[in-house]
Length: 194
Image 1 (cartoon, rainbow, N blue to C red):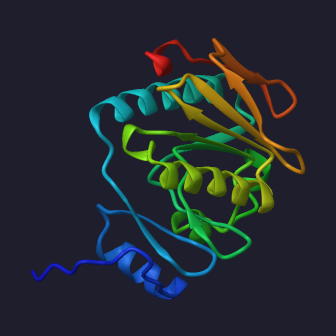
Image 2: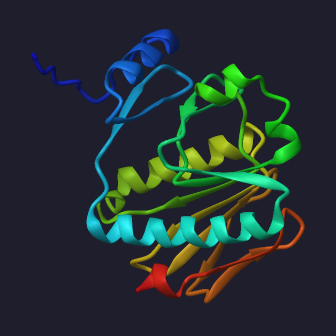
């Protein structure tokens, strides 16, 4: 098989994205609203371990709460602006998810999550990549996500993004919670910040 190098700033259509994603199922791909293809680096051990802990805690709460369902970083959502995005972890209210057809649920769901988490990995710590994650969080808010947490383990900071509000930055919080959107969910950051 011949391999092709895809340059940064390469643009494709949503249909081409779906064809590429179906062909290259092991690659982590996203598509911006303007059609720029984003190929995400594989996760290293440290980031993978921390993301596993995030998902573990979210999944435990979902199993107890039963009002929604969770997704990992391999799920691509079609946002209202046309972007195809994959948060590191996300949650959707069950009643909203159940409004989708089985075909929509099986493919790239055309729905915006209610809650997203993005974990900053060591490779994201360049100024441009961190700025890209902040822009991605703003895009989530602009498209209907109610709450987003951008977690940066190295500096032990969290940006909390809410619709129609400026991000709130927390320095070295021990845990995160949001009763009005995720009743009873508390994310312990001990294993994320170490």
